[in-house]
Image 1 (cartoon, rainbow, N blue to C red):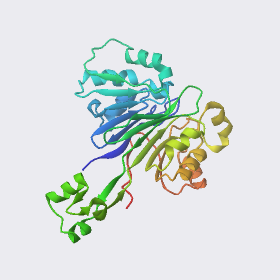
Image 2 (cartoon, helix red, strand yellow):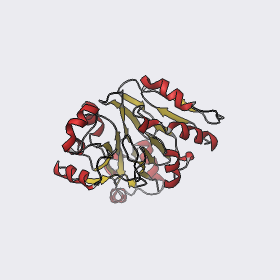
Image 3 (cartoon, rainbow, N blue to C red):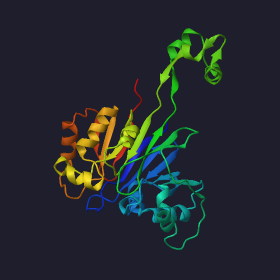
Image 4 (tube, rainbow, N blue to C red):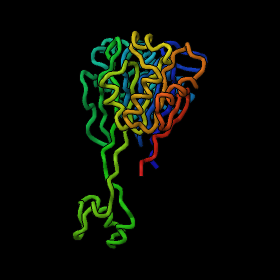
Length: 302
């Protein structure tokens, strides 16, 4: 059975704590792994979480602040040390090319793996073929920052009772799915629409159009909530969200499972973020992220 889950490697903002590493998130999507924002210490967190370099097919960096990118050097070198057998693609803001270059070649090592650089310069699709579309949207932060959204194509769900009613079974089912019609019976007659699943990753930003576009209709949304409401002015000044703002955006977007993360070290009580998110009216599934947590993508809606 295919696996779709988020592996949380780190959840701290700016400064790691005793219990929170710098950022790092691996999305397992069937047979592919997408590593988001590998901050300092990500390689060790991967070891603790049971994530191997071989699990990484794509790296997505939202922006080049250290807590979101300093782990790139170690991760890239580990990919090469372990001789990952497949190519790896890296997405990051094009304006930060000099930072990516410095991190990629921070020290001497032997390159054994093809790493394709695919910088992001504008909103829009980055990958538009295969099992998903990967999109980017610009966020609002003191340095250029992009969020990412993964969309599975819509499909159709076969209804066994309708197949039986039309006497269709065995290899004919596959033929009907491939060709769309079999002996006068159309695929639409024996199936129902199956919306593709949606995932989004939103880090350091104020509320902006990009936040809303990325979050719309997501099954699983990972979003920063660096501050609580008492420090809303501080959040705006530094280009961040509060838990209330993140939860309100998720509520308005119809998000099914909200994951709050990227917490300031000033707050000792993680439950305060959940209280503020619920007070904002978000009623879906809610997780206040912790290091090494595994969060499954919600099951499809019936």
